[in-house]
Amino acid sequence: MEKVPMTAGGYQTLDEELKRLKTIERPAVIAAISEARQHGDLSENAEYHAAKERQGWIEGRIAEIEDKIARAQVIDVSKLSGTQVKFGATVSVVDEDTEEEARYQIVGDHEADVKEGRISLSSPLSRAMIGKEVGEVVEVNTPGGVKAYEILKVEWV
Image (cartoon, rainbow, N blue to C red; front, side, top):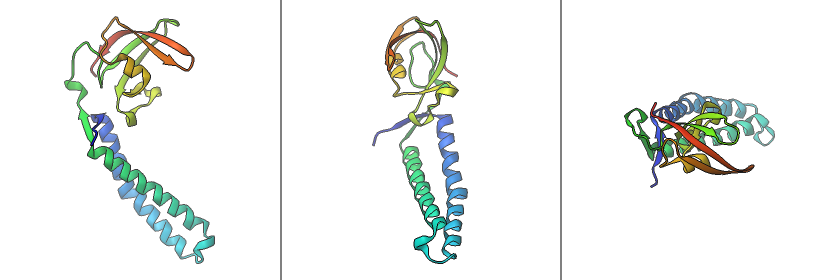
């Protein structure tokens, strides 16, 4: 069973979603199915079919989250240190062509949100930066061609 690396914040977010699905969403969809059944003929009952479809999605998502939580390898970023880029690091980089600076935290796949500055461990930029240190330049293949980034700073926040 392959471990799923995630930050403590990512684990908490998954746990909160699981609790919401089990305590709010699941009972609500069961009530909606029950109410739709009372309307009679199920073969032509759009509300019933929509509620059953929603129930299937909810149950699938619950199973997916429970699997991730069971395989979770929670990494407390605050206990990490060093100058080398690894999971959990917040890395400041500069694009060597545009001189544009960016700051990203390397997180688990389900935690990634580029707008929030969190990139997936499996993203091309993360894979290029892992193991590198401040001052090194990494090259990343992008749809627009090869981009070069210089690592300016590695933080553990």
